[in-house]
Amino acid sequence: MLDILTFEQWLHIGAIALLIIVSGFFSGSETALTAASRARMFQLEKSKEKEAARANIVSNLINAKERLIGALLLGNNLVNILASALATSLFLSLFGEAGVALATISMTLLVVIFAEVLPKTWAISNPERFALNVAPVVRVLVAIFAPVTRIISALVRLILAPFGVNILDDQSVLSASDEIRGTLDLMHEEGAVIKSDRDRVGGVLDLHELEVADVMVHRTEMISFNINTPNHELIPQILDSPFTRHPLYDEEMDNIVGILHAKSLFRALSEGDHDPGKINLYDIIQKPWFVPDTTSLQLQLNQFLRRHSHLAVVVDEYGEVEGLVTLEDILEEIVGDIADEYDISLKGVEPLADGSFIVDGGVPIRDINRAMDWSLPDEEATTIAGLVIHEARMIPDQNQQFTFHGIRFIVLKKERNRLISLKLIPAK
View 1 (cartoon, rainbow, N blue to C red):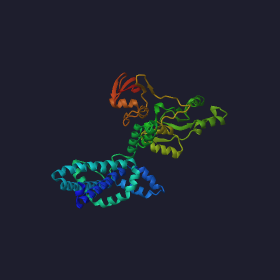
View 2: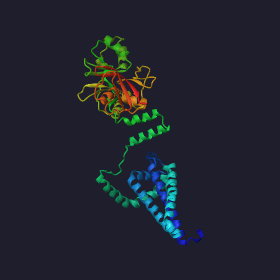
View 3: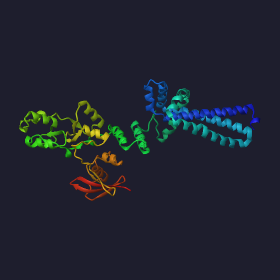
View 4: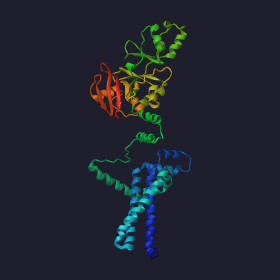
C-alpha cells in the first residue's frame, strides 16, 4: 500500500503528523499553564536563577487567563480541523466513499492519544517545568491570536447577556483564601496534611472574617473586681485568681476604671512591707483600653502588637461592657487552646460512650467544629446555645429536642433564658 502512495499523499501524511504534534503542544501548554503554581513562579521571579525571565512570562500569561485559554483553544481547534480535513481528503483518495468513516475513526484515535492524553499527561507530571519551556512560544501565539480572541470573547458575552450571565474580565470564582482552604482540605483528605496543621492555617485565614465578639470572654464569665472593696478582702481574691490581668470597676461592671497586673500588685506589696492597707490601687492600675465588638481579629491582633498590650475591654455600640478579649484568645484561634499550669481546665465538652456529647451552652461553635471536624454554621450565633436558639426561633424548654445540620440537640439544663447544658447526638 505504501509503495503506491503519490508524492502529494506523502505530503498529506507529513502535514497531518505535524499538525497532530502542534495540537499536542497546544493541549500540553494549556494544561501546564493552568496547573502551574503561581507561588512557585513568583518565587522564581524573585530569584536570580536563569528561569526568572521565563517565570515572569508564565506569570503574565496566567494573569491574563482569558486571553491565554482563548488563544490556545483557538489554535488547537484550527490545527485539529485542518488535520481532519487533510485526513479525510487522503482517505477519500485511497478508499473512496468509505474513506470518510475511516478518516473519522483514525483521526479520533490519533487526536485523543497523541494530541490530548499523551501531552496533557506529560504536562501535568511537572507543570511548572513544562510551562517554563513553552511560555516564550505561547506568549507569541497569544499576541498573534489576540484580535480574534477579543472578538470571540465579546461575542460570547453578547450571547450570554440576555440570559443574565455577566462575565467580568479576569473574573475569579474563588478568592485566594478559598483556594488555599480547598487545597488544604484536599491535602488533608489525601493524608499529606494533618488536621491540626490544616486548622492552624485556616485560623490565620479566618482572622479578617471574625470579630472580637466571636472570641471574647463574655461579661458573665469575666473575673473582675470592685475597686472599692477593702484591700484586705480584695487582694487575696486577686491573688487566688488564675489570671495575671484583672479589670477593676467602680461599683458597676460598665464603669471599668483600670486593669491591674499581678506583677504590679506584687511589687506594691513588696514596697509596702506586704501590708495591703498601704496600697492605693488607683496608683498601680493601667488605663483600660476599650474596643468595639465589631473590630476584626486581624485588626485587633495588629493593635495588640503595636501597643504591646495583651488585654482590651470589649464594648457595644452603646458603650456598655460586653466582655474582654486578650492576645491569647486571638492566638488560640490559630494554634488551638493554649493552657499552662495555672489555667483552669473547663473544656465544656464531655464525650460519652455511645458517641454523643454533653456540651456546655457557652462552648463556641468554632471550637467544637475544630475539635470534632464538624461544620456547624457560626454566622448567626457564636455559641452552641445561641445556635439552638437561632435555629429553633425560640428559647427551648428543658428536655426539648431539635435536629439541625445532621445533629440532634437535647436541652439538659436551663436557667431562666439560658441554656446551660445540652446533649449532642451526631447522626449515624
